Amino acid sequence: MGRLFWLLVIGLVAVATHISFLLFSPSLLYARQLNQQQVAIPTNAFQILGPENQSRLFPLLPSSSIVGVCRFDLAQGAVVLNAAMPSQYWTLTIYGRNGKEFYSLNDTQSGTSTFTVKLTAAKSAVELLTGNGEGDTAPRNLGWSVESSERSGLAVFWVPVSDRLMRASVLAALEKTSCDVEKKPDSL
Amino acid sequence: MRNISIVTVSLGLGVLLGYGSFVYAKDSYGMKSAAGGQGWQEWQLDQKQAMSAYTIAHFLTDGQLPPPANKNKFLFRKRDDAGNLLNGDCVFRLKGIIPPARWWNISLDGDQRDATTPAPQLTADDVVTFADGTAEIVISKYPQAGNWLRPANDSNFTLNLMIAGSTEGDEPPPLPALTRTGC
Image (cartoon, rainbow over all chains, first blue to last red; front, side, top):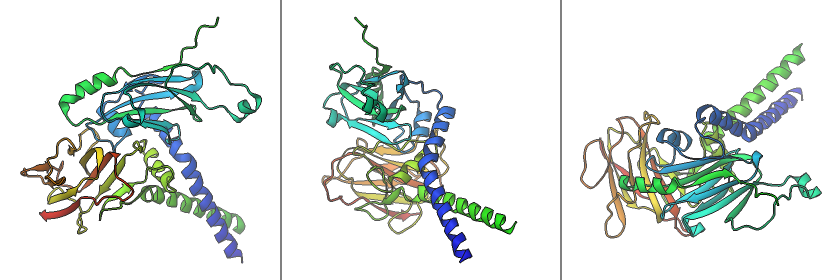
């Protein structure tokens, strides 16, 4: 009986440890590595990754392709991505701090190569109940609006490039992309 | 005293078992055998799939991000159809129709390749296919006529096939076969 009890304890502790590592360790380890290794990625600014950082962050993406990133932080307010993509296949994927995708788009789905995505923090349960945090709800011609339950994360623009001669023109198109904290309209 | 040591050993064993099973699961359960091709494996990136948590854990614990999943498929294999390890000293022939997609890429990821060296690769725009759409690519360290991929060195390598913007229907098409033709 005693032996069975301790075997049960071992089993329960093992299951709890397994679930804890699965839930918490990946995002903690990733955030630590991102802070330690990729310090070159500024917050709320668009940057095209160099080959080394691209290979480190996305080892499965072909090295010939072009990856642009925006490391967003919604603590200072909404973040607006003004995308200027080349006229070919591309994807935009937005990852939360925990590494999960919560928004994705490609050229066919967007139907346009220049567009805007506004990232806002999702309202908390308290804000929803109290009606606070409604903020500025005035409609604007801003393209897509995405609510993120994560306060920070990474928006990744990926463009495959086969021909080296095309690389310069694709880079020139993608470099026009921007990522900024939304400017508040002047109050009247 | 005896009870304290039993508690300590039980907790320690439980933690070790839990951690060990997590490490094993994140490196094994994030991928599955790809439909339509013997020997091909596929990363489970669709977050609706039960095991995708392990895929995400696999990448994040190495400081990486899972690649964009939207209509993209990431396939790979370490052995040919007969079960031989892929090695830079041997010659392999990849033959078949690449599944319909907006773009695709075939690359070789060697065991000893460092992150700064680009992987040998061919893309949808590089490969010349037969009239029926069949592609034939020879993987060899010596120059070959036609579509040729040269491994970075003589060590073992992984063959990656990335299918971007997949346009396949419900029935997955057959994947290209890989055979060893010489060593």
